Image 1: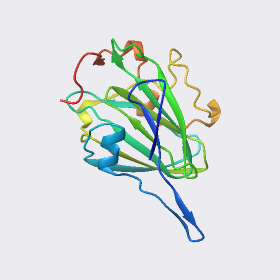
Image 2: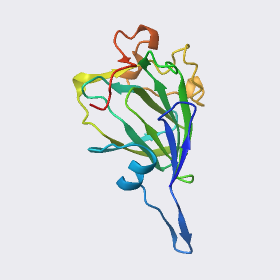
Image 3: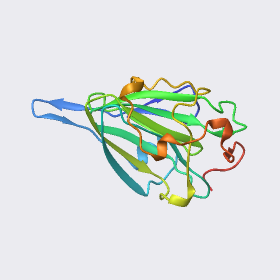
Image 4: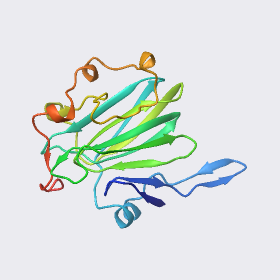
Length: 190
């Protein structure tokens, strides 16, 4: 696998080695040993899958301690714009984000470490989206930031009249109004 560094340390894009022939293709979507050698040590404990249609924006979600999560995300069918926002107060990149297009054709994966909010917009007619988490989902620990926070200025590449949101995602606070975020100095992996 090829690991591509981004503008925020720890947030990486992963390109698997693709083997193609007349029958189709094969690739290893995850290998624990290689992931630990090239990205970081983590143990994924939960796999999730969602299906969404064009215009859906999910996010920007995170889990509060002690249930913070790293995620390894990928698209099985379709295309998304995937976004990770640094929400570690005190971090030099606090409030900055990385956005990457993930598609069923480029087979890219995106690793989002603990201390980041995560979201995506659906750019294709339909998308099947999969992600691994290194901690279990706990509803009481759920947090989120407004997808349209003007301070973040994320271009989700969806016209405003086509955006589809859950009722919950319509009501999140801006980054600067969220009462509690991660302390940039805390050990998020303990």
